[in-house]
Length: 230
Image 1 (cartoon, rainbow, N blue to C red):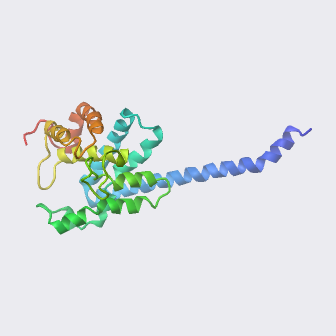
Image 2 (image 1 turned 135 degrees about the horizontal axis):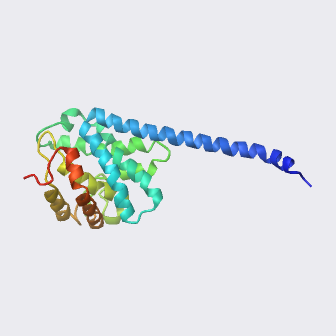
Image 3 (image 1 turned 90 degrees about the horizontal axis):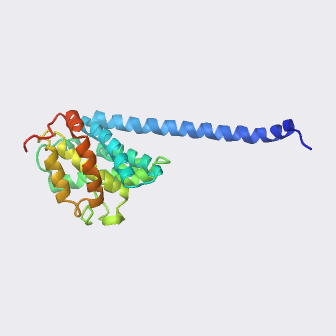
């Protein structure tokens, strides 16, 4: 009959291998988190509003996802997509990104490529496949009129539908070089008006309650007023 020492020695190589695998997995996860943070910093360097805006989105998407009953495993790709859905804008010329006036058709076509650029970057990292799809489709419209795929309703990944609503709200209330941010009530009115056409109605309903709870804090961060006139 084998002794405890014999059994331990027999199992030792397998135990050591398992520990090494876990160590390598932890190193990989740490590296990936660092890459995500670095990309977000890159957005800050390219366009401060985009980086800060993405950080707010990351906090909100998880709350909406939880409220809508998404699985815990979906929160991580949701958060990454919220942070980095616009990383593809690094491929769009500054003359377009920072233009004060209306974009020409040619400029708009170049701007509309940024979700594909985001996808092409994020998909290269193991573990970010789902996040890359969320980024790719965050400008799809619920009625099928969006881009780049013209997807409709539930064809659009749920993560993309969530990012789309929150992205639009935060963009509306934030100051831009060419306009002042909208008041909270007007931003919500526009979300509701586009519910069922541009946005998933269920996501809109889930989010507006969260936005109402945090409206004062959010507007303090954007430097605007929740009740400012349009």
